[in-house]
Length: 331
Image (cartoon, rainbow, N blue to C red):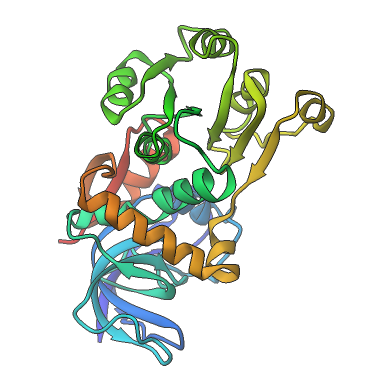
């Protein structure tokens, strides 16, 4: 059997190196893998890095990117017994057989039932942002009700998940955005206060909002100046959770500053939980399904584009001008 699939044929910018192949062999699941017919694929910045050859994993060329999907199971490999053919699932793909294809492979350890309360597009956008958010806020930072949570890029796909999860946990959520058009979005997501970093001094505003206490937890997917500013308004015994560097500059920790101000710097790499503590990921997903089914979380979706628009979607995401999660839907 063959299928259509977007493939990276050389490393470079997505619109230059992605090609739509019409007769790619449908992959067979190996041990610990699941094959799904793709209904929707969420677009991640990591897909851009994959195209450029700058991601932490470099599959052999050619390969199909697309790291998280929602779809129906069409086959299971050996040693897979928690899902069956026909199940509606979401999960993380097994490269080189990514989700920008009609069928893809998932790692069974990262394959979960899709919440009934979310449609395919929303379910496709749940895994990376919300698993990362839940583990970052609850497992790493141990966020408590009533604490001040500062979320950078609060109107984006990653930040919006943290906002909703912080709100559900009873935290006082301070969202940071760049531009007046994103302020209303962040408020609608559940931020108690929104700071437009282009118009206001972040450090001064956080200290005003918290009456000098500072942010107990900072959720940072941006890095660079955002991280630097966070260290200047972090509370006593505060925790900075580092989940990415979308701003383009990897932050450098000043450990003497962390010691003097008595705050913690916590890293989070989702894939390590899947391999080192899968039971924790299972607990995380169960709680996310519960929150989704009662309407406390729902991925903030941006554009939903057809299968033929994958290069345009990745180019738009790379430009940094998107809001929410972009999703590619099956034809």
